[in-house]
Structure formats: structure tokens, C-alpha cells
Image 1 (tube, rainbow, N blue to C red):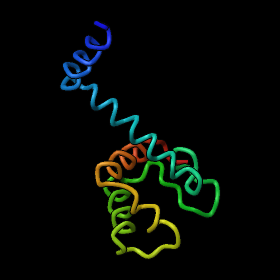
Image 2 (image 1 turned 45 degrees about the vertical axis):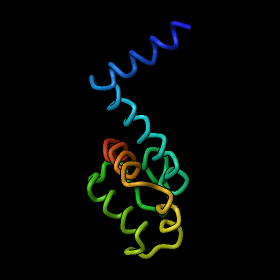
Image 3 (image 1 turned 90 degrees about the vertical axis):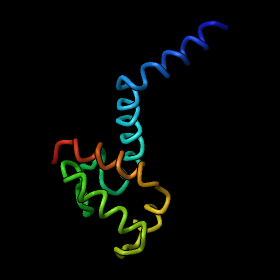
Length: 102
């Protein structure tokens, strides 16, 4: 019974010391995995869709928000982008931008 309580206390204590940043990195990777079907693994497209790997994070965030908000026309992206919050978009964009381009 003591181990779960200790674990919770450690997570809370370490959260302010950077554990949250590590969790955000994995969250971004997990969200970005949804982009792989069209834009390739880690944003490296092998088809007609543009590669996203290595692009500027702010550019990725802007485009996804424009898709989500109906300001940028698309066939599929508008619907997909509607499922993400600003925080999730930021996390995925940070992960994809950090990947090496093709």
C-alpha cells in the first residue's frame, strides 16, 4: 500500500523538475503518430503528401489550427484537426518539427 502512495508523491514532486516536459514529449509523439498514415512515420512522407519533419513548429501549428477552424480548405485535414486541442496541436508540432527532414 505504501508503494503506490510513494509513487504518487514522487510524480507530484518531480513534476516541477522536468518530468512534465518528458511526458509532453511522449504525448507529442503519440499524437503525431496519427499523422503517419498520410504524412509518413515521424512526418517523413514517401508519397504525394508533404513531409512535415523538420518544418517550423509555428508553421505546423498555424496550418493545423487553420484546418481545424475551417480557415484552410482540405478534404480530410479539417475533420481530423477538429479532434485536437491547442495543447495537443502544440505537442505534436513540437515533436514533428524536431525530427530530421528526409
